[in-house]
Length: 202
Image (tube, rainbow, N blue to C red; front, side, top):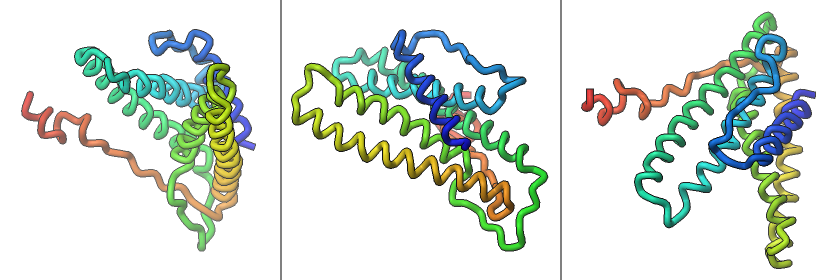
């Protein structure tokens, strides 16, 4: 099943990141783009999400230096764009994979593309990892651990349900019961022709 592969890769990425555990660490993709394209894209996607997760932690420090905060905000903006780009690359992979499938006459479109569902699965892997950290925190109170364990149980169930939904969606597309239609995000705030503030600086 696709979801098992994706979940295994996401967990591997998150564990690898936390060996060094700093947003400044270099990135190295363990999958070759030419021979393992899908794995390559999934690994890169989750790495972006993992770094951004920690960017979001850092910028919430109430004592952060304003200059450092502005720099970090720019990094978060760039990371968000990378995240969107990777989602579109993953959708392009599936569009190509299923390009020869003829949708049935009554085929339906899904509310989101496969890659945007995969995006949620990647974020969910991060939530599970960090909630589990809270459950196992040696300095946390029993009440805190119990509360986090309850939340972790929900997240684990959510991953199970989302994984099945993604596998079902891909199976439906492969069988012609659903079809893919991908819309580019067309974010306006990063475009110096569409964002009036950026346009005024030209």
